[in-house]
Amino acid sequence: MKVKYNRLFKLLIDRGMNKGDLQHKASVSTSVIAKLSKGQSVTTDVLLKICAALDCDFADIMEVDREGYINEEVFVNGKNILNTSSDNSFGHQIWDTANELQNSKVD
Image (cartoon, rainbow, N blue to C red; front, side):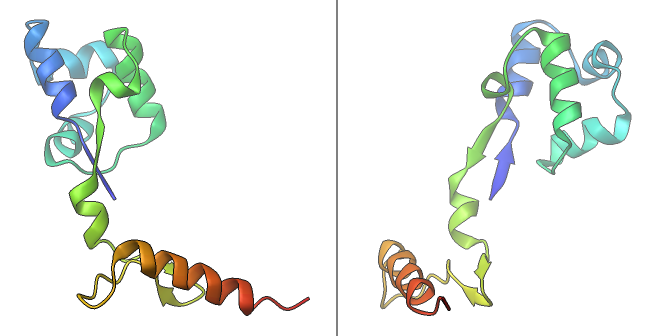
């Protein structure tokens, strides 16, 4: 699952700020700004600094990229539960995996 920071960059434009202004106001490094620009992961502490500097909440600066979520590999007990094969819907795969895990529990 990926995070998009388009809301952050729109907020900067609305406030007449650029990335350099954000870097200085939030006291974050140039590498953090680069990561945000590329949609890469940053720490919660960084996000908190940005929100404090801009007086906003997480939802004002980021959103979940649900497209990327479908293509991710998520393993539970060694089984890829997000394998998107054409013969089975996503919901059925989750349900089947949950049932398999429930049945394989050892008391």
